[in-house]
Structure formats: C-alpha cells, structure tokens
Amino acid sequence: MSDFTTRLPKNLYRAEQVRELDRIAIEDKGIAGFELMQAAAAASFNALQEQWPQIRHLMVFVGSGNNGGDGYVIAALAKDAGIGAEVIQVAESSKLTGDAKLAYEMAQEKQVPMHLFSESASIAETDHAHTVVVDALLGTGIDREVAGDYALAITRINAMQCPVVAIDIPSGLSADTGKCLGSAIEADLTVSFIGMKQGLLTCQGRDFAGEIVYDSLDVPEDVFTGKSSPTPSATRIDINDATRHLLPRRRSSHKGNHGHVVVIGGDYGYGGAALMAAEAAQRSGSGLVSVITRSQHRSAILARRPELMVLGTEDDDTETDELVKKATVIVIGPGLGNNKWARQLLQSALSGQQAEGTPLVVDADGLNLLAERVESGAPIKRSNWIMTPHPGEAASLLNTSVAEVQSDRFSAVAKLAEFWGGACLLKGSGSLICSEAHNNAIYLCTEGNPGMATGGMGDVLTGIAASLVGQGMELTDALCCAVSIHGEAADLAMANGGERGMTATDLFPYIRQLVNPSLN
Image (cartoon, rainbow, N blue to C red; front, top):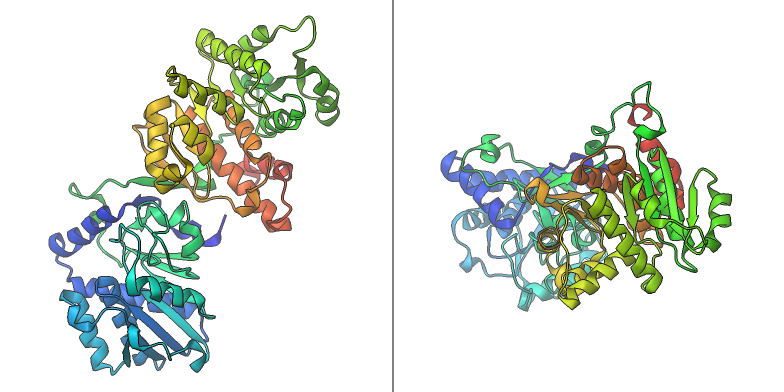
C-alpha cells in the first residue's frame, strides 16, 4: 500500500458533487468563499514546503477561475514566507471575478511579480535555484479537451526540469473519470480539498497526480453528512477493509467447513493458469481445491502442489459433471481457450451452477466465451457469479470498445453489473467493483502497483476470490477483499524486490500472511 493512500478519505465524489459540498459550506454554513480559498492555498503551501523543504522560488501558473485564485494566494503566502514567487497568467487579470479577483488583489498587495503567459517565453526555471512549479490553471470543472494557451502552458510545465504541485487536481485531468483530456499536468504532488475526486484514483489519474494529499479545510462534518449532502459516488477500499471480514476460525473446524473450490481450465499449453488459480485458492484458506484440466497437465500440477486433486478430461472414466456438483464454488476461465473443449466445460460449469445454485467465478477465456453470447443475441444474467474482466474483456462483454470503457470506468463497471448481474470487477489502476446486491454501489481499490502488469496475476486474483466465497463470504464482500489482498500482496512483493521482474507466484507467501490478519 502506498503510504499516502492510507491517509485519503473513504468517500469519493464527482466534480458536480464537490461543487455542491462547496455550496453547502458557503451558503448553508456561512463560510466565506474567500476564506475557503485562503485555507486551500495555505494547505497547498504547507504541503509543498513539507515535500520540498529546500524550496526557494515558486512559479505559479494561474487561470481565470477559482483554481487560479488559489494560485494567487499561494504566491502571496510565499512572499510572506520570504520565498521568491512569480505568477504566470494564462488568462488576463481583467477576466477575474469574485473570490479569484480578491485573490489577485491580495497578490498585488504583496507585490508578487506577474507576467502574461503569452509574454513569458523568456522566463525559465533555471533562473532560480530550488524552483517548484504550481499548477493552478484549471480546476475540476473541465469536461472537454484542453486547448489554446492552456494546452501550451501544460506542455511547457511538463517540459520543465523541476517538481510540480497541482492544486486540487492536475489541470487537464477529468475529476470524474481520471481520463486525460487531451493534455494534462504531470504532477509530483496533488493537494485536493473538501471532497476527494474519484478520478484521481483510477484510469490515468495516478499517472498524473503523483502523491496525493487531502485536506478537508476543516469544514464542519455535517457538510458531508447532512440531509442535503450528496451521496458519495464511490467508496475507496484497501487492505484495512478486507481484514474485518477475515475472522478467526473455530477451533473445531475441519476442511469441509472452508469450501471446495473447483477450478476449470488449462487447455494445452496453458496449464499454468489453472494451477495458479488453484494454488491461490489454497493459499487463501480453501479446505479443498480440485482442478479439471487436460490430462497431460496432471503430473506437472501434482509435482508442484500435491495437495490439489486433479481430474483429467481425456481419461475414459472422467466425470466432470459429478465433480462440479461437489463444488462449493466453481472457477471457469483460466487458460480455458476458445475451442470445442472449452465450450463444453463452460456449459458444464453453467449447468452445474444453475442446477446446484453454486457460485461461479468467471475470468479470462470464460469471459470471452460469454461475450460471444452478446454477439449472438443470447446473453445470460445471473445473480450468483463474479466476473473479473480487464478493459478488453469488459469491452467485449458490453459490445463496445476499450477506449469507450476507459473513457468512463465508473459507468462501465455499473453497466457490467446491470447487464450481467452478480458482482463485477473492472481491473486496472484503481480497480472498480459494482454489484446489484449492494444497490449498485461502486468500490475503488487503491492497492497494487505497476509490477502487477504480468501474466498470471488475474488467475491468482480469481483463486483468491473463489476461496473467500467458498469460505462463506458474500460475493461482493469476497470480491472487494480479494482485490485488496491481491493488490497489497503485490505491494509487499514490490517492497521486497521491486516492480520489475515480479511474477504472479511471488504473491503467494504474502497472500497467506494477509488472510491471517491476527499474525500481522
């Protein structure tokens, strides 16, 4: 887990909702808008001083709105603190109104040097030692691609060889989706206020935000909890949310109390996928784990994990359906392929699920085969399954493009849950979970790191989720816990050996540690 994410709030909001929180604070609670602006500027100035204590000069890029107003006040605070500051105005001061105009006048009173961006080409960060750039160009209200001088200013800032702090959100990043709107500031630090913007934590948000500091500006708690307060659009989850579900076992428990996971998959050449899912289920606490796979994989699987039970589909006495009936939870998809063999096994899993009411976890090729039913006009919707697509698989399941999925991941995961039912995951940076059983609430996980961009990680996640379901956890809770455990295990593996070169099986020792929180 990144250290800074533990300090972020759980409630996440869209830009429109944050504006409503601002309105409640100003109109209903009587807090002056300029007072909030000064508080935001002070929080930002304190955060950048803590991050870069050697700072001697600020270059503050400002726009025409309240985000620019924050920048003017920051420049004034720097002058008071004996730190050099200059303001680069992308919008002329004549366009300023309200609180932003008051902020400009405050900077004027402090005699902060100001330059129009169009006339500032000769100003360089190398003119001053220990310079920090402040991005106060655009706030959360932008909903279209950045253009004109704002785009030019963003390009210039990104090319500078000095650290950048973004005020509230990196300019050019969508607060709602985390999508880069043409161009966006690549910040080293982002200081966000009042409501935590959901877009900072998913899609491209983490690429542009850098480290994130949140400050409530000490507004009253009932700004967030009052009758007229907006309901958070999503909830942030991490390993701390998972541990409360992992209760100690009864002293009298036996293997039959902790679920029988049956993993179906592993076509020729892909036996490792089914094996990793099965071993992940073991490491997560399953009482029994069986694998239905190609017969030629049996020896290799048993050599690796003799505790597994392996049924080979090419054996004359194979009874796939009978084993499926014994399952507490079924996994279908890891290494399954898309041939006749795969389709027969998928049908066996779907029939077994329907006949016995057995929960089903669908991943990888299982998702791709289900997506074919969308094209044929015969999709199915079930309440007792978990679906774990990455953006490409989600695009197929929704009959759309990857670009469309990534343009609004929150909308995409909600559509997955609506269309397919059950508990649905949309993988990626800031993985999202949604289910109808939880009233379509959306959960965003802040665990994990880029070292997870390697083959087999999804198989391990699938095994964890199936194991938790088999041990009696409700589907959505199991999925949220699994994603958090999976990401935190990867973070621990990263801390031990770095991101590059991490493999999916590197997570196993940490998974076992994390599902036993009493030992941590």
